[in-house]
Length: 538
Image (cartoon, rainbow, N blue to C red; front, side, top):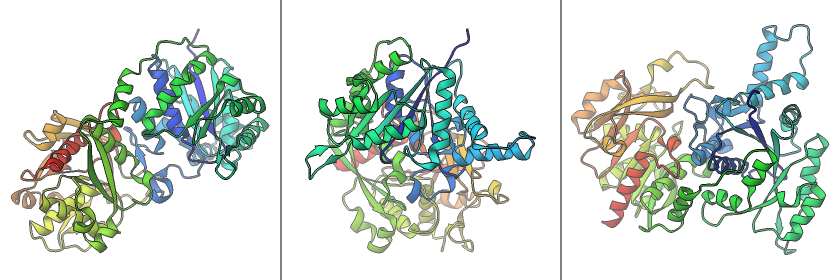
């Protein structure tokens, strides 16, 4: 008999931003720790083919997979919690689904038929769900974005209803995450919104097997009894998920205490193996009560006002803190404010400075002022993507004395284009999915800061960029003391730069934050936080 992959479908109700992605990742972690092989994916109801062209202020960060897909930031949670790399099959949007259907129609794939939402669109969605089925996968968790009742989500909800019917109740499970709000003026929690959300699902044929209730504080037994009765869910399968006190990494432990993973396995007719959370508990303990206290690091970016814009950056700094047994306090600084008020005023007292990626010329002079401050004051500096490019521009202007040095992204007529459009990008016209994306190898020079951090001479890192270090200026910058410590194998692309005479100064063209987890901090973040700790002690 052929192996059947089990499927868990996670939906949300009442409001958005309930943490469906975090909860899905936590469930995956628990199932993994019971010995099962898990994969995750997210269905996003927006019409963009992917989030690559969306503003960080609207969407948050764009998470890049190893195979070069620009995806939703929830995939970052999936990878951080489970350590399993996501792929293109881990994120589908309405735009991607409809593009496939329309393309097939134009090619004659539906010849003679009227193409409709049901069955053609729903069939394409079910095909996307099956994309993760494999002999080495026991469970696939599919998160459906949006909120029950949204018109955009209806095709996805209908597709998972059909899918569950096709594979059978022992092979498919519906989990609904909803909000139980606390009304402060009345001094009580209200279950009615959750009841109504479940009612919406029931009208389209989905009856949740498990109800996970987001709340500010634990629910009473009375609330759980009421939800079980009116939502037609077994009493023990009403799980409360109150706000955690310290970190999102406590969520799996809270769910495990309520045996959520046990109930899931029982519902799916799977053996309940032993649960091993020893390493995870030790990590959370270090995170909550680190032995080496706190270190403050500034993140100077263009999209600071929306925290999710740099979600993976903040998490990777937390991981670096865990690896060094300290807590990282992040000072969030808008680069435009540095431009207006000066770096000394806004960055005084920090033990490390990080400038992350971004696009466009807004706030760039503030970033350059930040680099100058870190370089001249001996403060550990970590530049990622745009942050590396700014480090090169600042060094070219102020150390190499290349007047007006800049990137052609910001000034096409610059006399010293130390950062320029990649040669492979010069004929590209479209914007979506056309950057240098995904995992690429890099050679590290011996005896460098990067070599010490990685403990390796060859690495793989994920990229998302169009502009690069201009090779015409290699010799000039090297002559003044900049070390080109990371180069791609063909020798054409400078991947990392350093200043050897500085306490810790490194810029990388790639995005190391996408490969950092709480159990295994990325080597560069671990090394950077360690340098910030040394700076704090002086």
